[in-house]
Length: 251
Image (cartoon, rainbow, N blue to C red):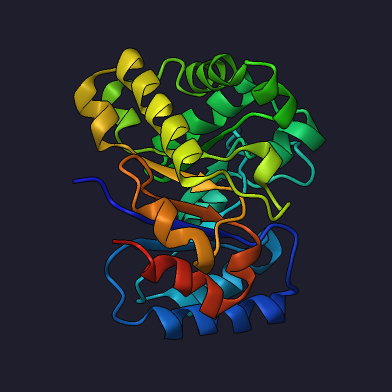
C-alpha cells in the first residue's frame, strides 16, 4: 500500500529563529499523527537548527535542493553529504521555480536524483506544466519528457525509493487549484508513464503527491482521489495548524 507523504516546502521564508519556532509548532501539532509521512523543508540556513527540533519526532527533515557534486568549487551550493550529516532524509528536486528562475534542466535534475539515491535519501521529483502548455495540448508531452529525463539510468529498485510531486505551475502560489478530477486525471497519467518506464508494480508502489495551493479546505477532496498520495505544500505549510490540517485530511 502506498504511503501518504505530505511535505511542507517553506521556500525562501522564515528567519532561522522563526523556522525553529514553526518547527516546534509542527512537531507539537503532529504528535500522534500516523496517517502520513510528514516532512518539512526549511531554508538551508535554518536546516541544522530545525534538525535539532525534529530529532526523535515523527516529522522528517527535508531540504529544497541539493548539488550533484560531492564537494568543490561550487559557491553557494550544498552537497548531499552535508545535508545527510545533519539528519536530512528527503530532498526536493526539480521544483518549477528552479526550472523557471534558475534554468534547471532535466539532465541536471537527473544528476541530482542519482546523487540523492546514492546517499540513501529520498528524492521528491517535481514535475508540472505551465498554463500555456496545458492549454496548448502539451501536458502529456511535458510530463513524459520531465519524468523520462529525471529517471534516466535509474534502476527500478532505485525508482521505488522515490516520491513524485505533480505540481501544475499555474496553480503554485496562485490560490488556483486544479479540480479534484483534473488532478486525478493527471496523476493517473503520471502513474501510467512510470508503468511504461518500469512496470505496473513499480508504478503502483510510488507515492505521487499533488502540489499547487493545497490547503485544509481542499485537501480532503484531493487526497480522496485514487492516484493522489499526499501533497507538496507551499503557503499552507508556513502555518502549523494549516499544515497539519492538510495532513489530517488524509483518508
